[in-house]
Length: 600
Image (cartoon, rainbow, N blue to C red; front, side):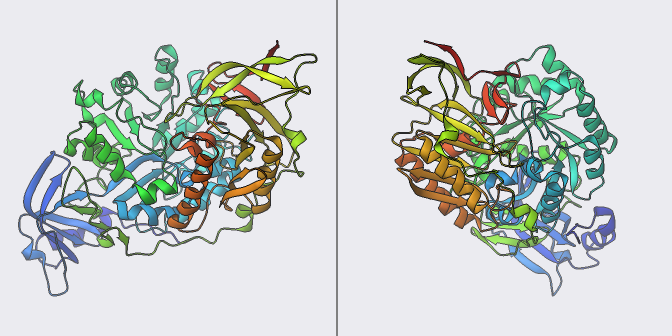
């Protein structure tokens, strides 16, 4: 695979010097803009940027000495020149798009650098899947840096994945050209307990001089948190309140605060900067994650920056959190994140720093988008058949596979139920009374069934439980092969026959999301690559996703971005209650608990 690797600053320094000195004309000059300097937090009017070999040669009040007969002149016309935006933590697969199509979707929104952890595909296809994501990422006209996934499975002993990531896999990946660090260390109990494999993975990363990503999804900021930080994770995005952000920054971590399609964690944490006055250098904005509908209709990192500003953050500080802070954290401050000599010429032209319209995007010195329209190609890999054939149920499922038997002679039961919390990743561990009919526990009110269907090894296994909070009504079911992080199949429904129809449909199409109501398919989003991604353009995927959301609403669901909630119900590293292919998991104690507690 020939990668689209970018020449280093030392490689092109002679050319940058010649251009900055005026001895050799620049390839591109952006003329007459307001230079937003994120190093000094200044907006300096009447500046030009001279670019050659895709990097910035100089930023000066007058770059006419760099202009030759063939120099491409871009008139800024008094607009702000800001660095291309960086997403510090995200998973491309969660956009339901391949790296190429994800890049095409975010370029018009001004994202020019992404730090991606492909642990979704790692759970399905192992190191080979990571390599495919890495290779397509390096073909793109923007910067997609890959973090080697650390935890597949995310919680050993709590779930079964298609493949497992080893310390040897991590060590190998650290030699690849696009790997910048270790993906989020989700096994936080393992780190706190000094698990040898977790320590070996972090050690291999640190010895390679790269960054260890964190994921501490616990409200406990006592000895367990202290032990986790001592292990080596350098950042964390699982905070939900100001105290979380403060604790992480005080311990030398970067607090990554996220605004994704379903997680709204910026407003509650940015007060550590806007009100408490802490040093903003240690806070980073990220998405973690945005699905295709959000990308098409609302934006990407530009959406996050606007939101941070709306929450009271100074626009220049918000921009630092989405540019230089991110670059510095990953050891790339001398390559990306600012408009200064030697850096990649990733520039946004915008007429307003608060509303942040993305009017022109330049990446590596080339215009890649004008007024919301992409103007470059984003190359695709030829994804192999193995990556497109990943849904193996082992049998055709029937309504009987989704039955939950009640203790003999009971008329009702007390059940442990997963409680969905709108706009947050954590769930609630509920105890609810449910009725029994013909010996089977029934859905009731806002509580419906959830099933985890094994899809990697064709075992035919189905684990059944209950979930509350979606508001579904009438006979329906929704199934998805996006089921973080093990990515089996999650089926949620009020009717067992519809649950079987939905599960079998996804086996038929090779993965995706479907919703059945009254026995009829209402919406289908095909995700044939690993059961996680489509290689169709974002707009097409978003249109199908919009139809899915409409079908969810028509079935009674009013939650914001309920699909994202659905897809995380098997994420056994975020409290309080989750489902896996091995049973119902209490993530507060990392123990399996029964679905049915006691007969009534």
